[in-house]
Image 1: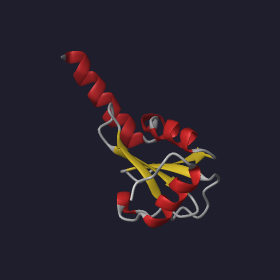
Image 2: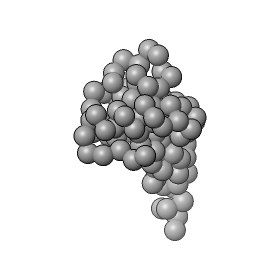
Image 3: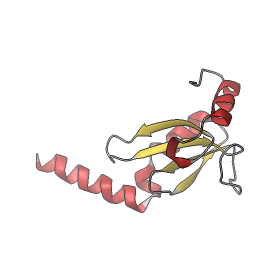
Image 4: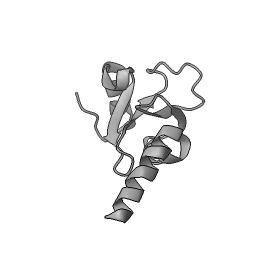
Length: 103
């Protein structure tokens, strides 16, 4: 099953998908280019973050979660910034950027 272009399609996908990043409600998983870890976007109502303040949240593979806002677009933006809100991602980002500068 794959999500489409509309919010309701993403909600149906999130309700049905399980096993991605060990949590139900995931509608997108991307590997962060300059961090080297996977970050997922989730529908709060289908996921296991009961006290999520918004409709969506982002979670990296380290387990750190961040409020993603009320739209898919805002959640994807938050997911792309995992090096800001997760200490483990920040370390990975720093190591990768230092290695790139050395080469």
